[in-house]
Image 1 (cartoon, helix red, strand yellow):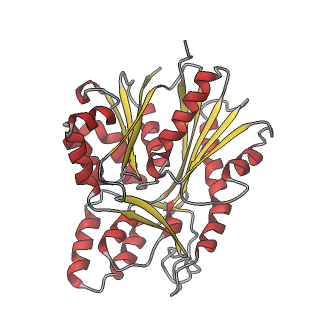
Image 2: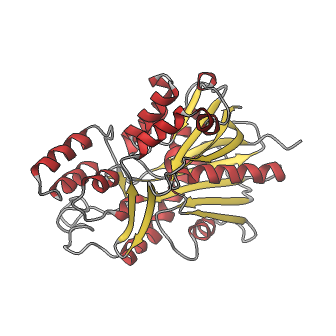
Image 3: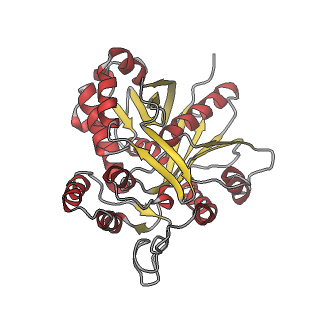
Length: 356
């Protein structure tokens, strides 16, 4: 019988530059129509986000990236090459910071596999190779880079680590999610993309997956997709970075999907919501969390771990779910938990978990 697999611990890291308020001011200024600006202000005020952090440095006069002297201050937005140069320099630093935080909780020696998820940048040699080299991992280590899967990439990374340990019980898999979403601010005068961009921040999370009991036991993974929703979430690569398209229809479509018994059964791994005592839902936005809460009729307190991530960090794409799991790891024991994330497709992916 395959060995039980555990997510032993999670380390997290964010940059030190809080850009949330400055970016809201910048976005509002993009809307020349007073009525649109009022609508934007109202929607931004309801986002339930207090902070978002960025690797982008403060400007020459100490301001944000959108202020004079900042990365986004010029009339022509920075090109994709300039954004990728920052990714290549800063993503490894943030990833290593998360690994260092993980190392304060348990030894991370004798790593046999490295699984890295990131959808906000490209560089070759890959971010997996850069991290492995800076950690001094042996050249023989098996590496996997999961790219461009978006917000549910953490599920794919942990699912892959689980498969590895089930087939090789002695394996020690280091899982890392790194996202630098603030590299992709886009100049637009449309409310929907502005609101979508104002949810995203930078962050990294690292976890150790082994057959040694401790942390959360990882259960059976699951995946499904919402019909007729293929284009509602997507990234488009442009000459000025990656343009995020997050349709305003997404929360309603998720809510409608979760009301359907077959989709809800798939999206909870076959569990009845009343049986689940630990929820790690990707904090893709307040409206998405509200949709899950209301459609599945779960108590508001059940999503506190996810709502706290949204308030403190915003949506960090693939790293966000790991932050929610880290919050749950520091709390009461979980008897039957579900991790759930939505992303491009529109896909819902997740897995069951419980305290060791």
